[in-house]
Length: 326
Ligand SMILES: *[C@@H]1O[C@H](CO)[C@@H](O)[C@H](O)[C@H]1NC(C)=O
Ligand SMILES: *[C@@H]1O[C@H](CO)[C@@H](O)[C@H](O)[C@H]1NC(C)=O
Ligand SMILES: *[C@@H]1O[C@H](CO)[C@@H](O)[C@H](O)[C@H]1NC(C)=O
Image (cartoon, rainbow, N blue to C red; front, side, top):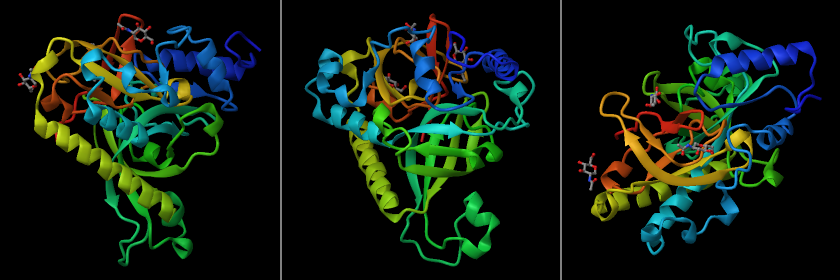
């Protein structure tokens, strides 16, 4: 074993070099073997050796927030609701259509290599109870009409474009819910990827549809998404920004290193005026954080745009994708 916990035989080392060369500033995590590799990668992370300022989901409480938010129950509830819809995104194949020079362009299709990012379930697209003549669009149902389901739940997940690039990658992607502690690994409810609805390479965001054949999961998730949106709209309509326009705190929910869900808190340090109008912030992020929701607490009219996390320039800056306006 080498220091980063991977066997040192040539193909894996070559693959690692390819990964290093091809990811640029984007923050995905990779694994070539058993997923227990991910914990080793976290331990030997050269960006953040302690991960002390990442807060595990179970330890998150209102006292973790900046002082002026500690008494605000609606803010805390919104963050909790966002935690419950944040997913770990696992992509098992990489598209050959990634352009030259773009993240993972050189990787090609390589069995056995998994990429990890984050995302959040943004809306419920089709309810499990819907009945019509259509059949489920997932790869399994689509390729075998004989077993195709007539009922399924369909959701839209938001993530970064470099995590799920196109339909091919969507069809090889899954989303895991409630991966809140390491004990959950391998036991999480999972959604299956279908297609990219909308995406933008410069803005670095993707909206991807995912399905489940599990009626309980589908109903549970529908309820969570609608709870989140209700809280979101309530706070958005309050528009009571002024109290700390200067500090502009952000809360990022993600799966650093493809490991369990963590919260990181910081402030916005810069904001671009031209497209992509992305934000840089002091909140911690690591490989695997790409695609996780970035909630900006300082200005509720800005809260209506939640960008996915995008990348980092070593330790100097961590930055988001283009914030969505909806
Ligand atoms: C909040 O954001 C809106 C939209 O960008 C902006 O017009 C407004 O000035 C901001 N308010 C504060 C207090 O920063
Ligand atoms: C970005 O995240 C890393 C890793 O958590 C952290 O060490 C670093 O301080 C962050 N960058 C900034 C500018 O805050
Ligand atoms: C966001 O901002 C950073 C730093 O200004 C920049 O390097 C990056 O390319 C920008 N775009 C996206 C989509 O993140």
